[in-house]
Picture: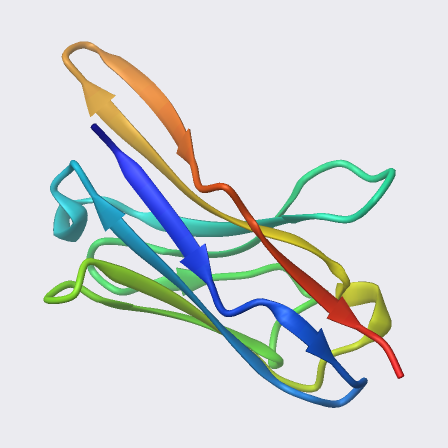
Length: 119
């Protein structure tokens, strides 16, 4: 079955950096776009970054220039490098993939990893 396992979260001071990892299994990783989302307490889940199977990336203005998504198809892993972290980046970060199963698209999420940016 599809499995997404995130790691790398933690507590960091403002201005610091973290690198999140998501190891994927159960599907043809190299052929699918991968995304990172985040959800802060009391807020809706929001897209942080997407990388296509070809390696093209996209991210919202709130993180552009600070966060970088990348992938290693040999390791079935997608990364999120987060620099210049701000307190408002505090959230649970989720790995996400949408896969065509038969004739239907299905959404898959990891369990999430907590990122806390605080003094």
